[in-house]
Amino acid sequence: MSRWYLTNSAAADARACDAAARAGLRRCGRVAEDDAHGEAYFKRSVDTPTFAVAADDCWIFCAGVLMLGGLMGTGALVDFVGMFLEYGIAAARAAAQGHYAVVIGHEGRITAFTDELGACTLYYGESNGQWMLSTSLSLCAGSMPGRAVESIHLDTFAGAKLIIGGGEGSRYEVETKAQADHSLPYMLAAALIDREMGNAQYEPERIQREDVQRLLRTVEVESDAELTRRFDAGEMPAALDVEVADGTVHHVEKDAFAGHPTRPMSWGQIAEKFTAMTEERYDADRRQEIVRTVRNLEGYDVADLVALLE
Image (tube, rainbow, N blue to C red; front, side, top):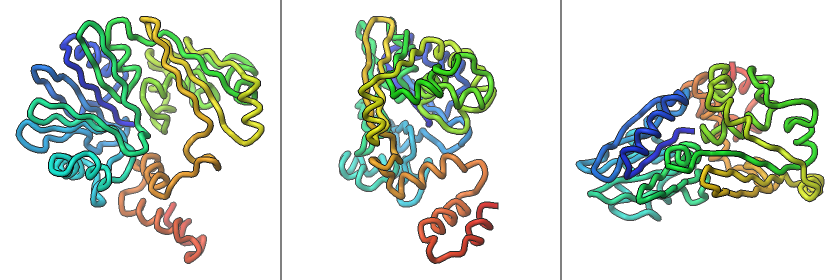
């Protein structure tokens, strides 16, 4: 997922810039005002803009996928800001599609919000009058004094612990894709830093980078009897604790992932994920044709779909 940060501190801004550079993020746009310093970054393998200047003294950062009127990128962001300025947050949300987190600066005011489902999380840190807002917990925590991530603890069901959590040997020695996709420590560390787990997170260069290699070694995975019982009953439960340097623990629990039978994805979500996974292989017209064919598969032959996938 693309990401951004915004802070009122020049020092935190510098630390975030350094962290982003070490993580290999590509800058899309930057804001440098008296009380607002920040950057927006492209997705790792996609060049869809995540930053736009909508008018004088008006700009937007966007993480995730935001579509408006069938458009993505600069045009969609500019129109989205116009909708927000004229009609407010509710109207802008109603007009847009996708899962996103945005921050909009206008005449010295800063407004941040997500899509209605809150699929993209916003993180906020504050210390000694300095604040940072970001779509990356790792970037937010690591750029504020005393907020660097110290450890990650996952409670999960017995099968996950056994197969990819260390029950059948160490999952901390990760150098290849085959090792990475069977390592909960790697996947948790990469997801925390990158805010996504897609094709790019399994590239050798990403796997071997120092930031994720360091963080994965702080991950502890334990099986939990109650979560195992819930898994056997049809859930996909997990409880996650992320501790930062000042002792603060961020806790989240989930009973299923998007796409699980108990939490089915909408067609919009499916199309969004398909786009994210195949942008480097198919152009926009081919992707739309594939989605249209799959959605109306009863009216096509299998050969039609196979031809589109070639």
